[in-house]
Image (cartoon, rainbow, N blue to C red):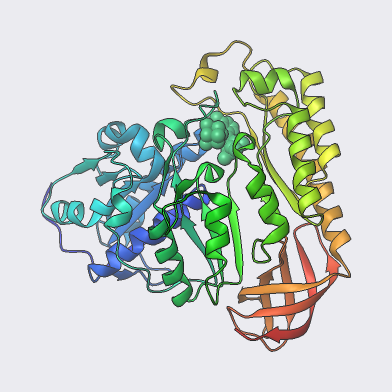
Length: 447
Ligand code: 5AD
Ligand code: SF4
């Protein structure tokens, strides 16, 4: 490969989960430190980082079509962009990417992206480089301090997963569970607030498994971390995601009733409503134990909004078992949820299980499940009408004077009036659609 000019502009495209969004922001900061600037909207970048997702087949295949598109667009613009593939596809299929896509000069796994600047120098010199090492934590120490933050920021506190659900690639792509140290998280949260964050969402594949030692050397879990972060002046809201039912302890449930800054929202994936399917998935809960757990959260925080993840068409799932998923949805009344067709992932136990389900059966089940979830989301939004609540303003709306923010229950709220991005305003919720609410501005709370 010939040597290339040092890139002047970059674009990071993140796919998949919020942890990738966090990683994408951090990679952008690394590139900015090297004097590379974001490519202007509508212009081809000199360096493109595809921060990929491997969780389902469609997500993984996207990387190859994206590379093709980039090469074509670059050719039209008379340049050959440097392409880096990062994220979980890089981790799982690094060598294959290098073999299949000659346009790619860097492959960097999720635990190695702090080495991106050094790989970039090698790429400019004409070398192709792959780094998919998984040294725990090292990357966080090697990252530059946070300088700018949106009002609602992400903070990765935990990575990896030891649960080995039989359908899931995460334990292979992100590795074993590790918790970032308490003091690093408090320092990063502090800096995020100084950089403009009013809300922080603590992220982890299994965030509820976070553990550490506080400033006094005492063992603390996620609830203790949240309690201490709530002391940061200027930080108004704390959220966390994603949790596993097996790791939800009494302290975290109690925290929802005790810490005002902890928002009344819980994303707790269940995946299915049939105990046979849950067992085959290697989930450690039953439908009944999951429902009992939710009841405890509701007892601690009666207005808590509930969210979940679902998979339809897991191998050998019968119509009657799928009906149990629908019954569970009826029993919970989710405020929102994500649902997916089962996608066999290479190397996972479920991929070779008997009874793989036909695509048209999956389509039909997904449609029925999503109809039920949409119905409940709309009902939850309608039930919010008449509430007056704080809304964190995240961006401007389409019309002049219009703003979009989030309610405590993570609903999108549109309103008009005097406000600015980052304000916490008080609004009355006056109208509800399936995906958002209309608000009427009451007052702006001083920062
Ligand atoms: N097929 C379909 N959905 C999956 N998920 C994880 N692995 C798969 C798979 N192989 C879903 C789960 C998980 C969410 C992040 O993605 O619902 O909670
Ligand atoms: Fe995947 Fe299960 Fe771990 Fe979630 S808990 S990341 S679904 S293995």
